[in-house]
Length: 418
Image (cartoon, rainbow, N blue to C red; front, side, top):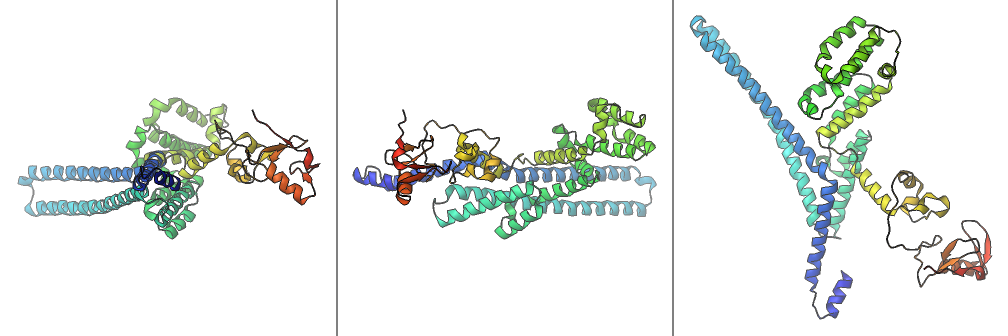
């Protein structure tokens, strides 16, 4: 901005400062809109999905109860001539009580829906504030810190640190920006699966059956299969047969071969094929945990990776070059060269730079016409300024920091790049 302002002054005010500020704000808004589209989809989508789920629950509850009450009223009317008045009055009182209970349930769901609407409005206001905030202001710094806190909180929730994330949300005052309720449900069910209990997960599948069927999820079948296998391995073969009759019938069209392999466990005391060994493996519990997590994320429009993962990988891949993978070529000022970051960047692609810049390995300064690159006899290249500073401290001697070998400064030769 200062450069543009100077140019505008030099040209006699052809570029007014007010126009420059407007352009800067417009660029910032476009940048934030791009970020929101790329990174904040789940942040806005989650409350929308929860509102839709609550609305559907209210509609289904009202429809089912009204249908029952209507059917009962028609029955009372048809039997009115042969039913005592007191009995009719009692049945009507029961229906009124049923409708009052329905009203309480609907009111409770409406309160939940109202809370979700407020959460959605709060999140929209938060992102809109980020697009319109004055760049460089103290308020902008506070907004960025708030955004960073919620990104870290989301990552903590995804890696299983629920209580740490909850404390961070409370300290930062961002409870409305986090999905604690979803991850609380997820944690409870995952803990139960780790304890080899399929009950909570099956209840969750029953509550979300229609949406899971749209996702073509196999989670419910696999949970029933795991309960069946547990009965077989515990020696309760009759119980396993009854369980299979009760729960496998609806899945024969899609999982007939899996069911046949599982039923063979009733005949053979030991598994005979690889698929039977897989059914008896304890690793299936870990697979159930992972599949449940994928399904609950999909139901609430949560991305598979946290925003922290995505942004960190994008940043590292932009900075990563071949020198970052070699211990002798790493630069202390390069984030990718830090050991922990280097491990994260191992499988990331290298950056593509059409215009390269030479950086002195010793000082971290750019090598250009004012600080030309100098080659030592061992082939390592450093900036002239760093070599001159070292030679002044060591009576004209230079020690290569990579090989620990000493050379006189006169042996350093200027490098020319074509």
